[in-house]
Amino acid sequence: MADEGPGIAPEHRDKVFERFYRIDKARSREEGSGAGLGLAIARWAVERQGGRIELDSAPGAGSVFRVVLPAGKLKEV
Image (cartoon, rainbow, N blue to C red; front, side, top):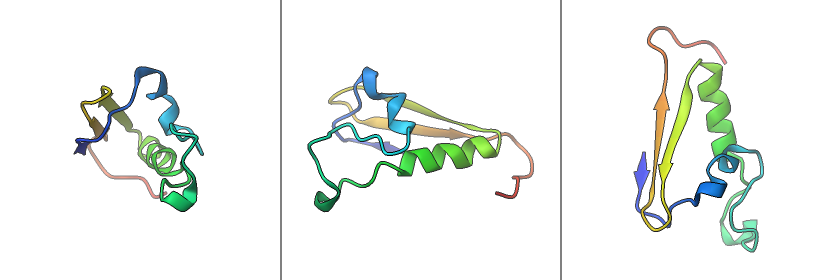
């Protein structure tokens, strides 16, 4: 999945997969910025299948999220 958003600075790239982590602490959930769980859940589900999520991003250039799964039958979660 790719987007054309503001991108993610290098110091935040590993942290965006942590539960409840939000880059912009000034934004609240009421403003629709989420709870900071989506990427943590996605990473958990992908890793449970023996895969990984890769992130390529640069400030001002958007982000690309790549899900890599092993070939074969998926595990029951």
